[in-house]
Image (tube, rainbow, N blue to C red; front, side, top):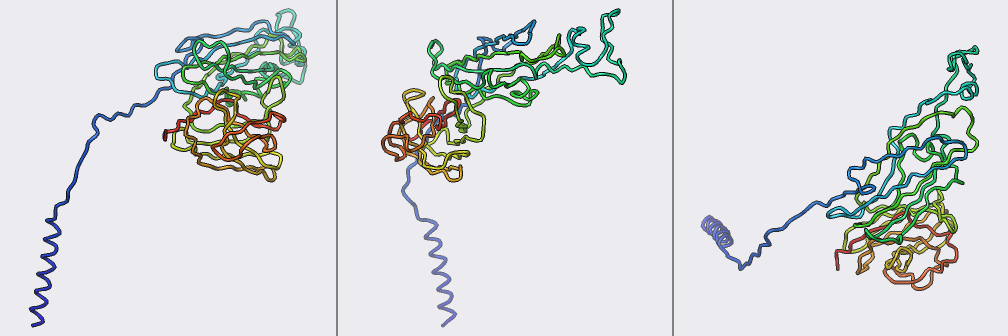
Length: 358
């Protein structure tokens, strides 16, 4: 009898499996056809040339002389996206050029008046060294103007990176071609005017007479990667970058339904700060992104703010809370008092955020 019940149990299980396998469910399928993903483009021109073949020559530089090399970068190619711009000096070569008696003797060698040349082996002990380091004597200044439209005549944003009084040389700025300089962001369809001067050190000695320097200028345009550095700035009228420990780095998602970000600051005075952004123009900062307190000079703010708006071609500022009027709630609006701008941080370029939730 037990065997019979056991066999009936097996039959019941098999029957249940069979029934489950034959059950039908109502369903509906919709198909979206023709979906396309197209890679964006990054393409710039310089002085309306692509590729850029222009070059500049500065002749007859003397201590105290200043010459200028200016150019314009356009970001108006088909399907243009906002881009970050970096400038580097490459393939730097320095040679003695024309050797004069003064250059020769100032470096400890002997001038051969008969052959009109320099004898680097005399006087003994020799040989003496011919110093060809003109780049260490060229003081450099640099500023940029950013324009949103191709035909705009009024800059949307300006930034001063170096001035003559900084005494920054080509060597210190570009480090023999191993260091690039961030010039800022060019909006899609916009352009940037790069203004730079080369000023020969007024104290440069005779050992630099006749020396020659050749170099390539490389302009790199990169897609926005969601990282900007908020720097310390000097006072009016230049608002020049102060290269020091006081700064902050903002990382954010360029395209996202919410503004997801992290801000890390250092070298700050202890206290509460408001991280805010401008919408209507480069300086009309009005919207709170986050609030945090710096301790021992360190500040960290993290958030995912529902803005319900894009944040394209705008500035981000770190402002002491005491200098902020209005709400300090993320996503809400307020107004900076602009009272102590020397204690603010803001970035060289602009940020670009696409709110995909609207």
